[in-house]
Length: 202
Picture 1 (tube, rainbow, N blue to C red):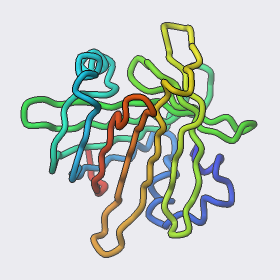
Picture 2: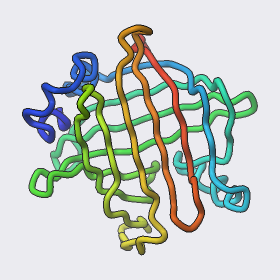
Picture 3: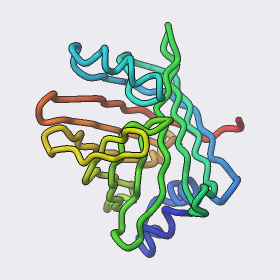
Picture 4: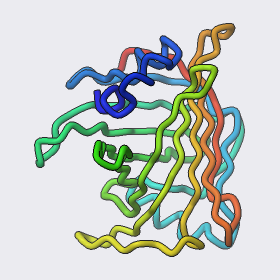
């Protein structure tokens, strides 16, 4: 619902399967399961921080190949009576299960998605959404802030993570495809994962 409003006429340029996925009517969650062909975490020296982030379902230190995962997107109304979408991503590693959650609303005046990362949120990011020529959805981060309780602190550019997400549909394999990259100029790659998934019943 929020993505239809934000993308306006461009929404119809998405692959038909992505249109199905991103309409997200209220109280009709989208469930899917799949496999991440690869998951990369950040530098080794940041792993203690990543372990702390797992307490709020944000970044995590694990990495690997052929990792099963599930995704749930739920459109709902928040306390401010705004439509929002709650993202739940769960990764099933051999030794542990990790989550990477987020809550999104839209700012139509600025034409961005407002993305709060973690549960409760630790970081905030403005996101720009665009439809590519092949009907995929590309998402890029803009400004970011650290969230400390009810206070939000603007992050210097060098401390931000450049996020690039591409979600598409493979007509041959009949699966959704996803590629996520988070990169920082000082620390290098903070996280990357790539995989595919199909809708399922919860």
